Length: 275
Ligand SMILES: NC(=O)c1ccc[n+]([C@@H]2O[C@H](COP(=O)([O-])OP(=O)(O)OC[C@H]3O[C@@H](n4cnc5c(N)ncnc54)[C@H](OP(=O)(O)O)[C@@H]3O)[C@@H](O)[C@H]2O)c1
Image 1 (cartoon, rainbow, N blue to C red):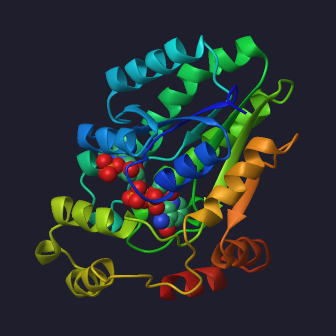
Image 2 (cartoon, helix red, strand yellow):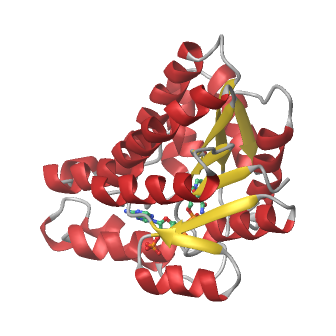
Image 3 (tube, rainbow, N blue to C red):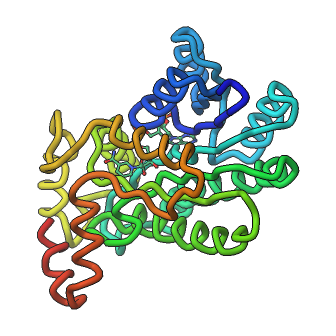
């Protein structure tokens, strides 16, 4: 499968690292990207083909794609859009810049990178664009507005692009994990500390409870799975002749997808407000 190259973003930890390792072990040619030079060096030292890619920076996206294509003679089988973070905070406490920053990484960067590799896939006549979305791409939770909005918007772009590419052999796939063990919570806590001031918020007490959850070690939500659960679905999305539009990962994702279909919004809201 060495002719099958896959570009992955956000490989410094969590799902990205696991998928990079898993696909490399399966024989794919993996380009495991990360935004910090020290992570690129670590990935290289661990035997992965790694290069820098910061999704909030257009020049970095362009340079990474150019380098990958130079190494693959202009071919790329798949893109796994993965690098992202969660900005916690009540919607009314999100400054415009904070929301923009969330979208720069979680949406605009993914969109720009996708658009850069799409011509390659068109030229070669096939390709896979796999987005790591979330259960929070189709149901909302309080205090996750920025992240929710970025993933809902991602789902909108992906659903549209799938329709636009319907008569091609380029497949757009959404993987939708529920809780997965990774550095996501630790990185969310850092974003919370950077951008939210609990003392000036109407939600001060709720934030203090949230701080405890964000700083806890180990899974805080039942049915949390290791990142290998996502890897399994990514492999399906890469190797199925006709991949599905959506792959759910974890019981909570299946559960909320069903509840969203069958429950009145008011009832669903009551459940989500208590999660
Ligand atoms: N963990 C979950 O429960 C869960 C559930 C559903 C969906 N997801 C999705 O899974 C994906 C991976 O998250 P994870 O759980 O593996 O969390 P993670 O361990 O925090 O990994 C996130 C990765 O994204 C990278 N990243 C952040 N900002 C970036 C930027 N500007 N440019 C490039 N990379 C950037 C991080 O790099 P740095 O180390 O440099 O920050 C890190 O490598 C995300 O899209 C997330 O939304 C996670």
